[in-house]
Image (cartoon, rainbow, N blue to C red; front, side, top):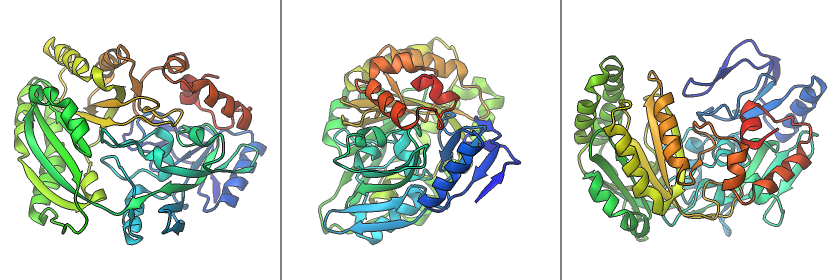
Length: 436
């Protein structure tokens, strides 16, 4: 279960690497307690991780690296309430079909699913939907092992539930999570090419009149791809995408060919505007009806780096205008599309949606390209509009900034001081975003 580390730990994107002193693969809450006891004896900091899908060093440590990959069981479910108890290391990819077998589903998902449940909620993974919330809003209870080895059951009546739902790994190791699910449902997907100016004019409609809407905008062009996913009436028959169309669009064009295109863009950056214009024209209109998680989730095998900010929904047109102006000034050439999504306000203390309806703007750069200048310029635009960065995506902001953006930030720090006064779960990233 525990061993001295002999190798480098890396996140999915490859931009975070560290060499921990020890590694652990606990399979139960009791084994997590034993890991923390060993870390205390050896005076090691502790970081738990699931899929390593964050682009920030939120899970990096040179102390005890705790993988949750052995904690993947569905522990219990209540068909009357729709609540499901799981071990925190189960991936969304594994959980979604198991929920379907129970006749249940998560109300919302992001567009990829390798993340562990603990990782998804701890970083504020959100998906899209102007009337919908992120995954953390579905958290009904959390089991947390603290630095002292105490097991806390934080349920709906516990004053810390809204702190534990998005905790950044700062309060302890999450070992079990109870999720409030909904009856399994189908989504009708409509995807079509669009012009960016037309989408900007329709933002209120897109966010307000669809269950889930998002679009991808190709920099240096006005080309975009619009996706609208809406729930269908009970009794509607599935009409999934055909195998050939799925392979062509989602495997060949969006992954195999796009990987080659990105490599060309690295070697021929002057071609990027033309490449984006072509890329924005390749995917045609399509519609299909399938299980919610099949519609939400897309394969993403082209590696990239990402920064994403939540901005007040009313600020989105200005943000897009300012990004367009930056591209027009030819400061940098960007080969990856920008993703725009929406989510409703929630009451989770460190959720990017805390007390605010948001638009989410995600900027990406291929993993072989330096994103520094681009991400810095985008961050300046986002922060000028009170942007809140996704906790698992790249940014350079610190605790002073977050104290101004989150009304419960001080309350979260007080909980942290109580459960981890010695900072067993600290690392450089948490020192920056939460303070020392």
